[in-house]
Length: 474
Ligand code: F3S
Image (cartoon, rainbow, N blue to C red; front, side):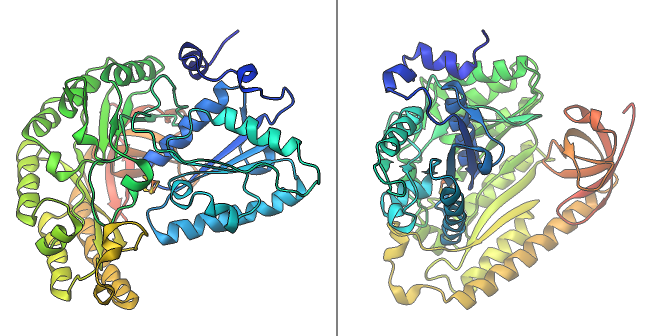
Protein backbone atom coordinates (compact mmCIF):
# COMPACT_ATOMS: atom_id res chain seq x y z
CA UNK A 1 0.00 0.00 0.00
CA UNK A 2 1.32 3.41 -0.89
CA UNK A 3 2.21 5.66 2.02
CA UNK A 4 2.82 9.37 2.02
CA UNK A 5 6.29 10.70 2.68
CA UNK A 6 4.96 12.28 5.87
CA UNK A 7 3.83 8.84 7.09
CA UNK A 8 7.21 7.34 6.29
CA UNK A 9 8.99 10.18 8.06
CA UNK A 10 6.78 9.95 11.13
CA UNK A 11 7.21 6.22 11.37
CA UNK A 12 10.96 6.39 11.07
CA UNK A 13 11.05 9.09 13.74
CA UNK A 14 8.89 7.01 16.05
CA UNK A 15 6.33 9.80 15.70
CA UNK A 16 2.57 9.59 15.50
CA UNK A 17 0.90 6.23 16.01
CA UNK A 18 -2.87 6.34 16.52
CA UNK A 19 -2.88 3.37 18.88
CA UNK A 20 -0.15 4.94 21.01
CA UNK A 21 -2.10 8.18 21.13
CA UNK A 22 -5.19 6.30 22.19
CA UNK A 23 -7.10 7.79 19.31
CA UNK A 24 -10.63 6.50 19.02
CA UNK A 25 -11.08 4.56 15.79
CA UNK A 26 -14.26 6.49 14.97
CA UNK A 27 -12.61 9.87 15.66
CA UNK A 28 -12.69 12.89 13.39
CA UNK A 29 -11.17 12.14 10.01
CA UNK A 30 -11.59 15.12 7.67
CA UNK A 31 -9.50 18.20 8.34
CA UNK A 32 -9.58 21.70 6.89
CA UNK A 33 -6.69 24.15 7.38
CA UNK A 34 -7.17 27.86 6.59
CA UNK A 35 -4.05 30.00 6.76
CA UNK A 36 -3.46 33.73 7.20
CA UNK A 37 -0.21 35.70 7.30
CA UNK A 38 3.19 35.37 5.70
CA UNK A 39 4.74 32.69 3.51
CA UNK A 40 6.23 31.05 6.58
CA UNK A 41 2.74 30.62 7.99
CA UNK A 42 1.43 29.35 4.65
CA UNK A 43 4.27 26.87 4.71
CA UNK A 44 3.27 25.90 8.27
CA UNK A 45 -0.27 25.33 7.00
CA UNK A 46 1.18 22.88 4.46
CA UNK A 47 3.22 21.27 7.24
CA UNK A 48 0.07 20.71 9.31
CA UNK A 49 -1.73 19.30 6.29
CA UNK A 50 1.17 16.91 5.74
CA UNK A 51 1.13 15.81 9.40
CA UNK A 52 -2.63 15.30 9.36
CA UNK A 53 -2.61 13.47 6.03
CA UNK A 54 0.19 11.27 7.34
CA UNK A 55 -2.00 10.42 10.34
CA UNK A 56 -4.84 9.33 8.10
CA UNK A 57 -6.90 12.51 7.83
CA UNK A 58 -8.52 13.42 4.55
CA UNK A 59 -8.05 17.08 3.66
CA UNK A 60 -11.35 18.85 3.15
CA UNK A 61 -11.69 21.73 0.66
CA UNK A 62 -14.16 23.69 2.83
CA UNK A 63 -14.81 23.99 6.56
CA UNK A 64 -18.36 22.72 6.00
CA UNK A 65 -16.89 19.40 4.83
CA UNK A 66 -14.53 18.92 7.78
CA UNK A 67 -14.64 17.33 11.22
CA UNK A 68 -11.60 19.32 12.30
CA UNK A 69 -11.17 22.99 11.35
CA UNK A 70 -7.85 24.69 11.99
CA UNK A 71 -7.49 28.43 11.52
CA UNK A 72 -3.78 29.17 11.19
CA UNK A 73 -3.27 32.76 12.24
CA UNK A 74 -0.97 35.79 12.05
CA UNK A 75 -0.21 38.28 14.84
CA UNK A 76 1.82 40.87 12.98
CA UNK A 77 -0.82 43.61 13.12
CA UNK A 78 -3.91 44.38 15.13
CA UNK A 79 -5.95 44.42 11.94
CA UNK A 80 -4.80 40.91 10.96
CA UNK A 81 -5.86 39.58 14.36
CA UNK A 82 -9.27 41.26 14.23
CA UNK A 83 -9.87 39.76 10.82
CA UNK A 84 -9.03 36.29 12.05
CA UNK A 85 -11.18 36.67 15.17
CA UNK A 86 -14.06 37.61 12.88
CA UNK A 87 -13.43 34.50 10.82
CA UNK A 88 -13.25 32.29 13.90
CA UNK A 89 -16.53 33.89 15.03
CA UNK A 90 -18.21 32.79 11.79
CA UNK A 91 -17.37 29.20 12.63
CA UNK A 92 -19.59 29.36 15.67
CA UNK A 93 -22.59 28.99 13.36
CA UNK A 94 -21.07 25.80 11.99
CA UNK A 95 -20.48 24.52 15.51
CA UNK A 96 -24.11 25.21 16.39
CA UNK A 97 -25.20 23.11 13.43
CA UNK A 98 -22.67 20.33 14.03
CA UNK A 99 -21.69 20.26 17.70
CA UNK A 100 -19.17 17.46 17.15
CA UNK A 101 -16.70 19.34 14.96
CA UNK A 102 -13.41 20.37 16.54
CA UNK A 103 -12.19 23.93 16.03
CA UNK A 104 -8.54 24.80 16.56
CA UNK A 105 -6.66 28.08 16.33
CA UNK A 106 -2.98 27.70 15.44
CA UNK A 107 -0.08 29.95 14.52
CA UNK A 108 1.27 33.25 15.76
CA UNK A 109 -1.95 34.78 17.12
CA UNK A 110 -2.68 31.52 18.96
CA UNK A 111 0.76 31.75 20.56
CA UNK A 112 0.29 35.40 21.45
CA UNK A 113 -3.18 35.16 22.94
CA UNK A 114 -2.90 31.68 24.46
CA UNK A 115 -5.90 30.54 26.47
CA UNK A 116 -7.35 34.06 26.57
CA UNK A 117 -8.63 33.06 23.14
CA UNK A 118 -11.11 30.75 24.87
CA UNK A 119 -12.66 33.82 26.50
CA UNK A 120 -13.08 35.54 23.15
CA UNK A 121 -14.19 32.37 21.36
CA UNK A 122 -15.52 29.81 23.87
CA UNK A 123 -16.35 27.27 21.16
CA UNK A 124 -12.65 26.86 20.25
CA UNK A 125 -11.32 23.48 21.38
CA UNK A 126 -7.62 23.82 20.75
CA UNK A 127 -5.04 26.62 20.74
CA UNK A 128 -1.67 25.59 19.30
CA UNK A 129 1.41 27.77 18.78
CA UNK A 130 3.92 27.39 15.93
CA UNK A 131 6.10 24.89 17.81
CA UNK A 132 3.22 22.56 18.69
CA UNK A 133 2.36 20.94 15.35
CA UNK A 134 4.38 17.74 15.62
CA UNK A 135 1.82 16.14 17.93
CA UNK A 136 -1.25 17.68 16.34
CA UNK A 137 -3.02 14.33 15.71
CA UNK A 138 -2.57 13.30 19.33
CA UNK A 139 -3.84 16.67 20.54
CA UNK A 140 -6.88 16.39 18.31
CA UNK A 141 -7.49 12.89 19.64
CA UNK A 142 -7.25 14.24 23.19
CA UNK A 143 -9.63 17.08 22.44
CA UNK A 144 -11.97 14.67 20.72
CA UNK A 145 -11.79 12.29 23.67
CA UNK A 146 -12.61 15.16 26.01
CA UNK A 147 -15.58 16.07 23.87
CA UNK A 148 -16.86 12.48 23.70
CA UNK A 149 -16.71 12.30 27.47
CA UNK A 150 -18.87 15.36 27.96
CA UNK A 151 -22.18 14.83 29.66
CA UNK A 152 -24.28 17.67 28.29
CA UNK A 153 -24.56 18.12 24.53
CA UNK A 154 -23.63 21.83 24.62
CA UNK A 155 -20.94 21.68 27.29
CA UNK A 156 -17.50 22.78 26.18
CA UNK A 157 -15.61 19.54 26.81
CA UNK A 158 -11.83 19.65 26.98
CA UNK A 159 -10.03 22.79 25.83
CA UNK A 160 -6.35 22.35 25.13
CA UNK A 161 -3.45 24.73 24.69
CA UNK A 162 -0.04 23.79 23.27
CA UNK A 163 2.08 26.89 23.61
CA UNK A 164 5.56 25.84 24.62
CA UNK A 165 8.24 27.41 22.44
CA UNK A 166 10.80 24.70 21.77
CA UNK A 167 14.26 26.06 20.90
CA UNK A 168 15.02 22.86 18.96
CA UNK A 169 11.79 22.24 17.08
CA UNK A 170 12.35 22.67 13.36
CA UNK A 171 10.10 19.78 12.35
CA UNK A 172 13.01 17.61 11.31
CA UNK A 173 11.84 14.28 9.97
CA UNK A 174 8.38 15.55 9.10
CA UNK A 175 7.42 16.68 5.70
CA UNK A 176 5.01 19.31 4.60
CA UNK A 177 2.50 18.85 1.85
CA UNK A 178 3.53 21.01 -1.07
CA UNK A 179 0.37 22.33 -2.64
CA UNK A 180 1.85 24.52 -5.37
CA UNK A 181 1.54 23.06 -8.88
CA UNK A 182 4.57 24.86 -10.25
CA UNK A 183 6.71 26.00 -7.33
CA UNK A 184 7.37 25.06 -3.70
CA UNK A 185 8.19 26.94 -0.51
CA UNK A 186 11.00 25.30 1.43
CA UNK A 187 11.33 26.43 5.04
CA UNK A 188 15.01 26.26 5.99
CA UNK A 189 14.77 28.26 9.20
CA UNK A 190 12.20 28.94 11.90
CA UNK A 191 12.12 31.68 14.53
CA UNK A 192 14.24 34.80 14.73
CA UNK A 193 17.26 36.00 16.75
CA UNK A 194 16.79 39.66 15.87
CA UNK A 195 14.86 42.00 18.11
CA UNK A 196 13.42 44.69 15.85
CA UNK A 197 11.45 46.72 18.35
CA UNK A 198 8.21 46.73 16.32
CA UNK A 199 8.10 43.00 15.65
CA UNK A 200 6.14 40.30 17.47
CA UNK A 201 7.69 37.39 15.57
CA UNK A 202 10.56 36.50 17.98
CA UNK A 203 8.03 36.34 20.82
CA UNK A 204 5.61 34.04 19.03
CA UNK A 205 8.11 31.92 17.09
CA UNK A 206 11.08 31.80 19.45
CA UNK A 207 14.76 31.80 18.57
CA UNK A 208 16.25 30.93 15.19
CA UNK A 209 16.35 27.22 14.40
CA UNK A 210 17.91 26.03 11.16
CA UNK A 211 17.26 22.81 9.31
CA UNK A 212 20.07 20.45 8.43
CA UNK A 213 21.45 21.19 4.93
CA UNK A 214 21.18 17.51 3.95
CA UNK A 215 17.47 17.50 4.79
CA UNK A 216 16.85 20.67 2.78
CA UNK A 217 18.73 19.27 -0.21
CA UNK A 218 16.92 15.95 0.02
CA UNK A 219 13.56 17.71 0.00
CA UNK A 220 14.50 19.88 -2.97
CA UNK A 221 15.84 16.85 -4.85
CA UNK A 222 12.64 14.93 -4.23
CA UNK A 223 10.53 17.84 -5.47
CA UNK A 224 12.73 18.23 -8.56
CA UNK A 225 12.46 14.49 -9.21
CA UNK A 226 8.69 14.94 -9.05
CA UNK A 227 8.87 17.63 -11.76
CA UNK A 228 8.92 20.93 -9.79
CA UNK A 229 11.46 23.38 -11.14
CA UNK A 230 11.12 26.41 -8.86
CA UNK A 231 11.74 26.63 -5.11
CA UNK A 232 11.77 29.52 -2.66
CA UNK A 233 13.88 29.10 0.47
CA UNK A 234 12.06 30.52 3.48
CA UNK A 235 13.20 31.92 6.79
CA UNK A 236 12.45 34.88 9.02
CA UNK A 237 15.95 36.19 8.28
CA UNK A 238 16.77 33.55 5.74
CA UNK A 239 20.30 34.68 4.95
CA UNK A 240 21.46 34.37 8.55
CA UNK A 241 21.08 30.58 8.10
CA UNK A 242 23.95 28.61 9.67
CA UNK A 243 23.88 24.86 10.20
CA UNK A 244 26.56 22.20 10.46
CA UNK A 245 29.15 24.62 9.10
CA UNK A 246 26.99 25.61 6.13
CA UNK A 247 26.32 29.29 5.50
CA UNK A 248 23.30 30.52 3.56
CA UNK A 249 25.28 31.26 0.36
CA UNK A 250 26.65 27.71 0.39
CA UNK A 251 23.17 26.24 0.79
CA UNK A 252 21.82 28.56 -1.90
CA UNK A 253 24.48 27.40 -4.35
CA UNK A 254 23.82 23.74 -3.54
CA UNK A 255 20.05 24.13 -4.00
CA UNK A 256 20.62 25.98 -7.28
CA UNK A 257 22.65 23.01 -8.54
CA UNK A 258 20.06 20.32 -7.78
CA UNK A 259 19.35 18.69 -11.16
CA UNK A 260 16.00 19.84 -12.51
CA UNK A 261 15.85 23.06 -10.49
CA UNK A 262 15.65 26.06 -12.85
CA UNK A 263 14.67 28.84 -10.47
CA UNK A 264 15.62 29.54 -6.85
CA UNK A 265 14.35 32.45 -4.79
CA UNK A 266 14.67 33.22 -1.09
CA UNK A 267 12.80 35.38 1.39
CA UNK A 268 13.18 37.36 3.59
CA UNK A 269 16.81 38.33 3.92
CA UNK A 270 18.05 40.80 6.54
CA UNK A 271 20.16 43.58 4.98
CA UNK A 272 22.94 43.00 7.53
CA UNK A 273 23.48 39.46 6.29
CA UNK A 274 23.72 40.34 2.61
CA UNK A 275 27.38 39.39 2.37
CA UNK A 276 29.74 39.51 -0.60
CA UNK A 277 29.57 35.74 -0.65
CA UNK A 278 25.78 35.88 -1.00
CA UNK A 279 25.90 38.46 -3.79
CA UNK A 280 28.51 36.33 -5.59
CA UNK A 281 26.26 33.26 -5.31
CA UNK A 282 23.37 35.27 -6.76
CA UNK A 283 25.53 36.51 -9.62
CA UNK A 284 27.16 33.18 -10.44
CA UNK A 285 24.43 30.57 -10.00
CA UNK A 286 22.28 30.65 -13.09
CA UNK A 287 19.26 29.18 -11.30
CA UNK A 288 19.17 31.96 -8.68
CA UNK A 289 16.61 34.46 -9.92
CA UNK A 290 17.39 38.14 -10.44
CA UNK A 291 15.15 39.17 -7.59
CA UNK A 292 15.82 40.35 -4.05
CA UNK A 293 13.45 41.40 -1.29
CA UNK A 294 15.37 43.77 0.94
CA UNK A 295 13.34 45.21 3.84
CA UNK A 296 14.21 48.88 4.34
CA UNK A 297 11.60 49.65 7.04
CA UNK A 298 12.58 53.34 7.30
CA UNK A 299 14.70 55.87 5.43
CA UNK A 300 15.68 57.70 8.63
CA UNK A 301 18.78 56.68 10.59
CA UNK A 302 17.22 57.81 13.86
CA UNK A 303 14.11 55.69 13.29
CA UNK A 304 16.19 52.70 12.10
CA UNK A 305 18.11 52.95 15.37
CA UNK A 306 14.89 53.04 17.37
CA UNK A 307 13.69 50.02 15.42
CA UNK A 308 17.02 48.30 16.25
CA UNK A 309 17.54 47.41 12.60
CA UNK A 310 21.33 47.71 13.05
CA UNK A 311 22.07 49.35 9.68
CA UNK A 312 22.07 52.92 8.49
CA UNK A 313 20.54 54.30 5.33
CA UNK A 314 24.03 54.67 3.82
CA UNK A 315 24.79 51.02 4.55
CA UNK A 316 21.51 49.97 2.98
CA UNK A 317 22.24 52.04 -0.13
CA UNK A 318 25.73 50.53 -0.34
CA UNK A 319 24.22 47.02 -0.28
CA UNK A 320 21.83 47.98 -3.08
CA UNK A 321 24.76 49.34 -5.08
CA UNK A 322 26.83 46.17 -4.55
CA UNK A 323 23.93 43.93 -5.57
CA UNK A 324 23.18 46.01 -8.66
CA UNK A 325 26.86 46.06 -9.64
CA UNK A 326 26.98 42.26 -9.73
CA UNK A 327 23.41 41.42 -10.74
CA UNK A 328 22.56 44.37 -13.02
CA UNK A 329 19.07 43.24 -13.97
CA UNK A 330 17.98 42.60 -10.38
CA UNK A 331 14.40 43.44 -9.37
CA UNK A 332 14.28 44.80 -5.83
CA UNK A 333 11.33 44.81 -3.47
CA UNK A 334 11.06 46.06 0.07
CA UNK A 335 8.98 46.49 3.25
CA UNK A 336 8.40 49.92 4.76
CA UNK A 337 6.71 50.94 8.01
CA UNK A 338 5.49 54.51 8.41
CA UNK A 339 4.48 56.35 11.58
CA UNK A 340 6.78 54.42 13.89
CA UNK A 341 6.63 56.15 17.31
CA UNK A 342 8.51 59.42 17.18
CA UNK A 343 8.70 59.59 13.37
CA UNK A 344 8.63 63.27 12.35
CA UNK A 345 7.37 64.61 9.06
CA UNK A 346 10.99 65.23 8.01
CA UNK A 347 11.94 61.63 8.83
CA UNK A 348 8.99 60.38 6.85
CA UNK A 349 10.19 62.53 3.92
CA UNK A 350 13.59 60.83 4.25
CA UNK A 351 11.84 57.49 3.71
CA UNK A 352 10.15 58.82 0.58
CA UNK A 353 13.54 60.06 -0.63
CA UNK A 354 15.07 56.57 -0.25
CA UNK A 355 12.14 55.00 -2.11
CA UNK A 356 12.71 57.46 -4.96
CA UNK A 357 16.50 56.97 -4.88
CA UNK A 358 16.56 53.17 -4.81
CA UNK A 359 13.61 52.76 -7.17
CA UNK A 360 12.19 49.50 -5.85
CA UNK A 361 10.28 47.37 -8.29
CA UNK A 362 7.75 46.65 -5.54
CA UNK A 363 7.12 47.87 -2.01
CA UNK A 364 5.00 46.35 0.77
CA UNK A 365 3.89 49.30 2.84
CA UNK A 366 2.50 49.34 6.38
CA UNK A 367 1.44 51.75 9.07
CA UNK A 368 3.05 50.95 12.44
CA UNK A 369 0.78 48.74 14.56
CA UNK A 370 1.62 48.45 18.28
CA UNK A 371 1.98 44.83 19.38
CA UNK A 372 1.71 44.16 23.08
CA UNK A 373 4.97 42.86 24.52
CA UNK A 374 7.22 44.40 21.87
CA UNK A 375 9.75 47.05 23.00
CA UNK A 376 8.32 49.82 20.82
CA UNK A 377 5.07 49.80 22.82
CA UNK A 378 7.07 51.03 25.81
CA UNK A 379 8.15 54.25 24.06
CA UNK A 380 6.61 57.42 25.58
CA UNK A 381 2.89 57.53 24.73
CA UNK A 382 3.13 61.12 23.51
CA UNK A 383 5.48 59.92 20.76
CA UNK A 384 2.87 57.69 19.14
CA UNK A 385 1.87 59.17 15.81
CA UNK A 386 -1.86 59.99 15.59
CA UNK A 387 -3.86 57.60 13.40
CA UNK A 388 -4.88 60.32 10.97
CA UNK A 389 -1.23 61.33 10.43
CA UNK A 390 -0.16 57.69 10.03
CA UNK A 391 -2.94 57.05 7.52
CA UNK A 392 -1.99 60.13 5.50
CA UNK A 393 1.70 59.12 5.46
CA UNK A 394 0.84 55.62 4.34
CA UNK A 395 -1.27 57.01 1.52
CA UNK A 396 1.59 59.24 0.34
CA UNK A 397 4.09 56.40 0.57
CA UNK A 398 1.86 54.13 -1.50
CA UNK A 399 1.47 56.88 -4.08
CA UNK A 400 5.23 57.37 -4.40
CA UNK A 401 6.03 53.63 -4.43
CA UNK A 402 3.36 52.96 -7.06
CA UNK A 403 4.56 55.80 -9.26
CA UNK A 404 8.12 54.41 -9.14
CA UNK A 405 6.84 50.92 -9.93
CA UNK A 406 4.79 52.19 -12.86
CA UNK A 407 7.79 54.07 -14.27
CA UNK A 408 10.06 51.03 -13.98
CA UNK A 409 7.52 48.66 -15.48
CA UNK A 410 6.80 50.99 -18.40
CA UNK A 411 10.47 50.84 -19.35
CA UNK A 412 10.19 47.04 -19.44
CA UNK A 413 7.35 46.93 -21.95
CA UNK A 414 8.72 45.34 -25.11
CA UNK A 415 11.05 42.91 -23.33
CA UNK A 416 10.72 39.20 -24.04
CA UNK A 417 10.81 37.30 -20.76
CA UNK A 418 10.95 33.67 -19.74
CA UNK A 419 7.73 32.99 -17.85
CA UNK A 420 6.83 30.02 -15.68
CA UNK A 421 3.10 29.59 -16.26
CA UNK A 422 1.30 29.27 -12.92
CA UNK A 423 -2.46 29.31 -13.42
CA UNK A 424 -5.48 30.48 -15.39
CA UNK A 425 -6.20 34.18 -15.11
CA UNK A 426 -9.66 35.54 -14.27
CA UNK A 427 -10.11 36.67 -17.86
CA UNK A 428 -11.22 33.62 -19.85
CA UNK A 429 -8.55 32.32 -22.21
CA UNK A 430 -5.71 34.01 -20.31
CA UNK A 431 -2.97 32.48 -18.19
CA UNK A 432 -0.83 34.05 -15.46
CA UNK A 433 2.84 33.47 -14.92
CA UNK A 434 5.91 34.97 -13.37
CA UNK A 435 9.20 36.09 -14.87
CA UNK A 436 12.55 35.33 -13.24
CA UNK A 437 12.38 38.83 -11.78
CA UNK A 438 9.03 37.93 -10.17
CA UNK A 439 6.96 40.15 -12.42
CA UNK A 440 3.43 38.90 -13.01
CA UNK A 441 2.29 38.61 -16.64
CA UNK A 442 -1.12 37.73 -18.12
CA UNK A 443 -1.28 36.44 -21.68
CA UNK A 444 -3.42 34.32 -23.97
CA UNK A 445 -2.54 30.64 -24.18
CA UNK A 446 -4.17 27.28 -23.61
CA UNK A 447 -4.26 25.81 -20.10
CA UNK A 448 -1.96 22.92 -21.09
CA UNK A 449 0.86 25.42 -20.80
CA UNK A 450 0.41 25.63 -17.01
CA UNK A 451 3.58 24.33 -15.37
CA UNK A 452 5.76 24.95 -18.41
CA UNK A 453 8.22 27.69 -19.34
CA UNK A 454 7.28 29.96 -22.24
CA UNK A 455 8.56 33.20 -23.66
CA UNK A 456 6.27 36.19 -23.48
CA UNK A 457 6.65 39.67 -24.94
CA UNK A 458 5.54 42.32 -22.43
CA UNK A 459 3.04 44.46 -24.30
CA UNK A 460 1.68 46.72 -21.58
CA UNK A 461 1.53 47.34 -17.85
CA UNK A 462 -1.16 48.24 -15.36
CA UNK A 463 1.52 49.34 -12.89
CA UNK A 464 2.04 46.23 -10.78
CA UNK A 465 1.39 43.61 -13.50
CA UNK A 466 1.95 43.17 -17.21
CA UNK A 467 -0.04 42.12 -20.24
CA UNK A 468 1.91 39.99 -22.68
CA UNK A 469 1.91 37.99 -25.85
CA UNK A 470 3.20 34.48 -26.23
CA UNK A 471 6.35 34.26 -28.38
CA UNK A 472 6.49 30.78 -29.89
CA UNK A 473 9.91 29.25 -30.59
CA UNK A 474 11.91 31.91 -28.72
FE1 F3S B 1 4.17 35.46 9.72
FE2 F3S B 1 2.32 36.89 10.90
FE3 F3S B 1 3.60 35.06 12.24
S1 F3S B 1 3.76 37.62 9.44
S2 F3S B 1 5.62 34.94 11.33
S3 F3S B 1 2.26 34.73 10.49
S4 F3S B 1 3.07 37.05 12.99
